[in-house]
Each structure stands twice: as structure tokens, then as C-alpha cells.
Amino acid sequence: MAEHAHGLPVGKKLKCGVFLSGVIFVVEVVGGLLSHSLALLSDAGHVLADIMALSLSWYGIRQAGRPSSSKMTFGYHRVGVIIAITNAIGIFVIAVIIFYEAYHRWQQPPEVDSPLMLTAAVTGLSVNIFLAFWLRREQRANLNVRSAFWHVLGDALSSIGVIIGAVIIMFTGWFVVDPLISVLISIVIIASAWGILKEGLKVLLEAAPAKIDIDGMVEALKRIPGVKGIHDVHVWSISPELHAMSCHVLIGDVPTSEASEIRKRVEDMLRDSFDIEHSTIQTECAECAPNDIFCTLHPSQCEDDGKSKKGQ
Image (cartoon, rainbow, N blue to C red; front, side, top):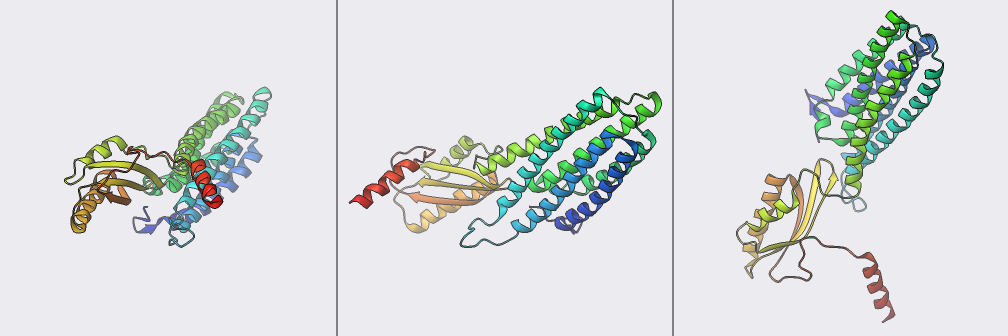
């Protein structure tokens, strides 16, 4: 996880982002009410989501830094994932509200004060461009920060849409442009939210990371000297940037020191070639049944076994 860029911790950047977004929110709400612009008010609604996203992302960063414990053995890395999913759902809700308001304004578009609308939108765009540029590095390695980044970037794009709408209204008097721009803004931010939601759900479902070729990884591990087979493979993500893996490695009936060296070579390949920092390797010199690459878990069978043992 990237904690620093240009010497400033990402947590402090997020806190500054909350303050600057608060300023934009006030400017756009006042400007939207005075100018009667739904596009500007919808942008203000998205800024409010920015404030929530930045605040929650800051909280997620703090939680991820907490040490592991006997009750939270993997630490708190998935707090950020849950926050990212919450942010994505928040974007969907805001988009639905904008669609609803745009439908009514399309039927009866009110008169809009385009100069005031333009001034407020330019102010919002300036601050959002600054925030997006500020968080561009951290968002590449952290889903939590990425969700906040896309909130900010989506708001910058929506501000551009508001500016275009204000200019068109100013020169043509087509007030129907205002709800149309609102709908286009919503489509853009929904697309970004969908990608974040999918990635977050994959982590919670413990799906294999998309960038890791599991079959290719298994074949590469089999080519390590001393390795006769690989099975019972599990690869998952603790967070989008932190991957884990467990497996059984079949080796010969060799001394413990040699088995330890084989295990080390496996761990080194996982770390260097497949970006898997946390691995649990079980070495064995006899095949266990079933000897499948991937193990299918059967909770009901375990429950039945437990009940039969109690009855004995």
C-alpha cells in the first residue's frame, strides 16, 4: 500500500481532500439553488459522495495499518474493501436520484442562470483536478483510495459537463441541456462505480486475483528442482494489493533441511514471479487423496462427521 508520495502521507492527503471537497459542496449547492441548475446540484450531490468517500477512505487507511491480533489474524485490510464497495453503492444511489430529477426537468425545463452556473462549475473543476492529480499515484495500488479517486475524477468530469452545458445555455437559451448533461454525468460515474464494485466483491468472495495465471503458476512451480507435484491450491486476495496462497507440495523422502530448501525456492518464486507475499506451503512425500490441483470443500460433510463422532 502506498503511504507516501512527494513526502506527504496519503492519510493527510485524504483529510485535505475532505476539506477542499466541503468548500466545493457549499459553492455548488448555493450556486445550484441560485441558478436553478439541476446539473450543478447533481454535481453537488456527487461532491457530497466525494466527502463521504474521502472520509471513509481515510478511515480505511488507518484501519489497515492496525496490527493483527488473536481475533483478527489477517489484520484489518478488508475494511478498505468494504468501504470501497460502500462508496460504489453510494454512487449508484446518487445516479438514480439524478435520473429521476432529470426526467421531470426534461418535461418542464426551468430557466437557468448560466453565468452563475458556469462560475460555480469552474471552481469545482479546478479543485477536483487538483485532488485527482494529488491522489493519482496512491490509487494505483489501493482499491480503497482508488474508489475515492474515481469519486473525485468523476466529479471533475461532471464539472466539465456542467461547464459545457452552461456555455450552450448562455449562447442558445436551450435550458433542456441542463437535465441532459445531468444524465450523461450519471452514466460516466456509474461506469466507474461498477468496476470498483466488481473488484471489491471478488476480494470478499476470495476469488483468485485476475492478474495471476493459476495454471501457469502451478506449471512453473512443478519445474522447481525437487518438486514432484502441486495440489490443493488456494489463491486469494486479502486486499486487492495483498495476495495469499496455500498448497501441498509433493517432494521425495528427503532430509528436513533439503525439504526446507525446496519450500524456500517455492516461496521465492511465488513472491518474485507472481506477487504473492503470503504463502503457506505443506510439503509431503506421499500423495494424499484426492490428488486434485484444486480442492473442493464440503462443509456439510464435515458437519455430518462431527455429528457421527458425537454419537459414538
